Every structure is written in C-alpha cells, then in structure tokens.
Image (cartoon, rainbow, N blue to C red):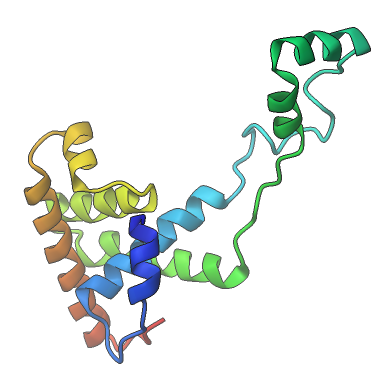
Length: 160
C-alpha cells in the first residue's frame, strides 16, 4: 500500500484547515504539476511516430522480444488533470512562498517532502537527496504545514 493509498482512505475534508490536510493538498498539487504537459517534453510534440518500422524491423524485434515493449510505447496515453485539480494545485503550490517567506528552511522542507510524497517516497528519500536527517525534514515539513494552516484559518480561506 503506497502513501497515496493510505491518504485516500484517510481523506476526509476537515471543517477547518489543519497541518496534515495542508500537507495532503500540497502533495496533490505536486502530483498535478507532474501530469501537466510541458513545452518541448517528449510525448507532446509531433503526432507522428518517432520513426517508421519496416516489416523486417518488426520481425527482428519479435525475435528479440522487443516488439511488445515497442507497442506499449506507441500505445500509451497520458492522462490530463481536471480543471478542479489544476485550480487546487494553483492555490496550494504558492502557500510555502506566501506564508513561509521569512522561514526558508521550513519552506524548503515543506516543498521537498510534499514532492517526495507525490512520488510515493518519504522524508528519507529527501534526506538522501539533500542531506541531513529524515526526522528533521519531516519535523520541518509538519511545522510548516501547521503554520500554513493557521494562516489559512486566519485569512478565512475555505477548505477544499
């Protein structure tokens, strides 16, 4: 069971903002960003295939076991996020910059751990990539989410 599966089970929108719910919305925002097409990215250019296969090429691929992999690459579909998910993403991803601008280390932890959770990883992955200890990254993330939640409550931002 992945982190996303656990959060789906526990996802009940609270009456007011709290730290875990802020963390959830930030993680979902990061997931939505990963689904958006980027200019020049592979898969969003020309609708033509990368190259044309001749019959002899397909026979050689079949003999080498590559034909199935090639067909999977040619038939993949990229799912696009809904407008609701994009709107929530736009709202959430600016929170660390708006509410934690004077606390850079906490803002970095909030973003890094949210990205790790979006990739089904944990704070240990962040510590391995950026240095430090997983517990420190997690504590700073949790503190930052609580600060953001208190500011959202003070500004009377509706919970989504």
